[in-house]
Image 1 (cartoon, one colour):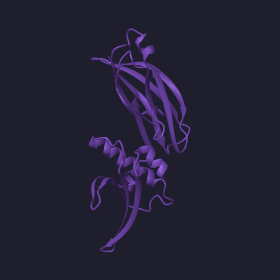
Image 2 (image 1 turned 90 degrees about the vertical axis):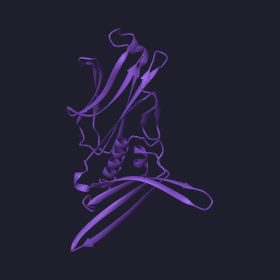
Image 3 (image 1 turned 180 degrees about the horizontal axis):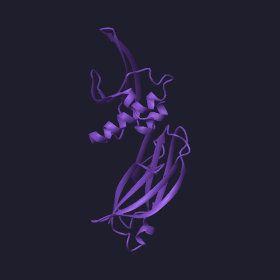
Image 4 (image 1 turned 180 degrees about the vertical axis):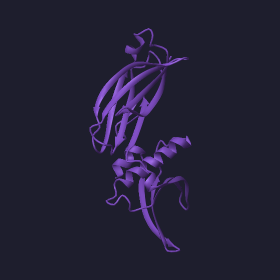
Length: 217
């Protein structure tokens, strides 16, 4: 599980604690997953919420009994210690087990690839001096044998122009990632493409499951 959690967010340690409370004859169970000292944590709250939901989904489907817990709580905890005191700051979200998806989809984009987490990172604005635009599509525990397509759009003031559609295989069970690389020089060779705003989109079984935007100067 540590490897799979690290594929979502690098961390120093993962702590897991399950409790069951009974009040007025009603029993409620909760699994708390604490991610200690997450690295490269986005500052955007929406992105943090997405990571929490992905971690909760991952643990739900790792349980032998997926209905074992009513609630899954994910805490993102920063611990700072000196010689005498340890201070902790955390952010967290709770999710009802029944509301969690059966799958995880993650799309990242940049000019670099982190092979330890299977994520792209770095810039989203490119010029002719850049060589590659890297896009990584990750998914977990989806229905197998669904077709996956990679689409590239150019956004204009009036419309989104579909530039290319590329089949990238079919979904497999488990934790999988696909890497797509675009050569920046090739894009600039096409006059109507060159400078502007672009969008990369991934489609599974005709459903858009994630996208990222970038700009060419």
